Amino acid sequence: MRSILALGAFLVVSTFAALPSRGGEPTIAEQLAEFRARIESLERENAELRQSPSPPSGEPPTFAGPALDRATDLELRLAELEAQYAVTGARELPADATCESAGHVIGSDLGMTASWNHGFEVATKSRDFRVHIGGRTQFDVGWFDADSSVQDNLNNPYEDGADFRRARLRVDGTMYDFIEWATEYDFVNAVRIDGVDRAITAPTDLWVTFNDMPLGNVRIGNQKPAIGFEHLVSSRFLPFMERSYNQDTFYGGTFNGFWPGISFFDNYSYDDNGSWNFGVFKPTDNVFSASAQDNDYAVVGRLTKLLWYEGEGKSLFHVGVSGMQQTTVADRTIFRTRDAIRTGLATSWPVPASTGTVAGDDMQWLNGELAAVSGPFTFQAEYLASYLHDAAPLVGNVVQPSVGDVFYHGGYVQLLYFLTDDHNSYDKLTGVFTRVTPQENFFVARDKYDHATGYGSGAWQIGVRYNYLDLNDNNLDGGILHNGTLGLNWFLNPNLKFQFNYMATYRDAPLAGDLGDGWINGWGTRMAIDF
Image (cartoon, rainbow, N blue to C red):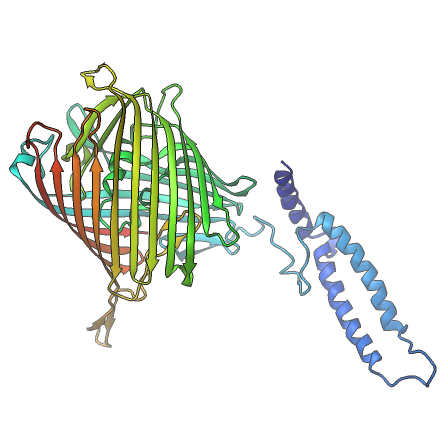
């Protein structure tokens, strides 16, 4: 409470200290700057007096001249002003202060200028007010070839397709210096209404953050719960077209990865090489972030540490652990995943592994993560263990006898390498990888006749990932998946990239004999732009 009161006092006295006084008289800050300048001038004058010829032998030197008297009077007045400024001023005035550098009153200058900051942005000079307008578009095309035993035993077959994986519009910004906000909507979520697949609009980031509070940074609204490294990496910065199976099975699934709630987060080491995040959320099972179920809650926490960090992130080693305690929505849940490439609406795309809807009152997740960067190399790995308590199958909507607790798990290992002189970027506050900024953008050089004479390279990256999911336990079986994905990324600039993926998935279906088992091959490409 004292910190909150101090913050309020700080803002109030900043305002009064910088306001012009009545009658056009200088403010305290201006008087301080003037007195400091005058004292410095008089001190130089006294120094010159001290260097003048010495008086006759035996007589003590005298420096009680007019300059010293004026300096003494000014110093006394300065002490009075500094004491007054400590009460009414915003902060201690620097020794070289001028009227312009005496401090900034938040909101005193609301004039904005426009610029490009990975999107259109207008901001005040001090950036205490800022508005950014942007979004992202991801256009995917895919071709598939699956064994007949797989195709004949799926909810929907694999088919070649094209779709907009994401189409989001976003407005975010800052107001009054310490308040950040974001509103973002995705226009290509899918629901099935009366048997017809429809694309609908749903919220993603929809929050307000209060920075530098006594409990760290406080975020309220629709947001990603802080569990899992890959889950927290923005879809704008993914090295493969899709995240691992963990995302679709556990972190995102039916609710797009966002929940309404409140979280607290900050760094905890003097060099910001560690981060923590704790949140309380309302679990939902839909993309609208809506729930009216009594007694449903989720508690999520994450702790990360950089064991080393050098060259502004060109070399680093990250470790992290996160966990969650969650009640299920209406005592129901589902574990299922789509594949590593998909080019169709979620409601009609094949699901190679699924438990179907099962009953269970609550569950726990525990996630471990590793990430490392060494120049052009990036290594990343995660493993998640999930425990569902008092699990029971459903026949229709009737709950069958409980089979007890069930254990599902999954993880991945991936390695990426830049063919150009580039490296991944890392955000210490969130503890995840962020935007790749090429050393050289793709460009077209032209001669005086407007003929193309050369091109820039952009950044090129190759990668490989092994991805695993096990949804078999205690006769509530959803299948096992093994997946390998090869990737090639071409970053034309920080805002536009092309991705090319090949995947090979082996499906071990939860059916009698070898029914439903087999290989699935897929080729996909994505054009992704964010601004």
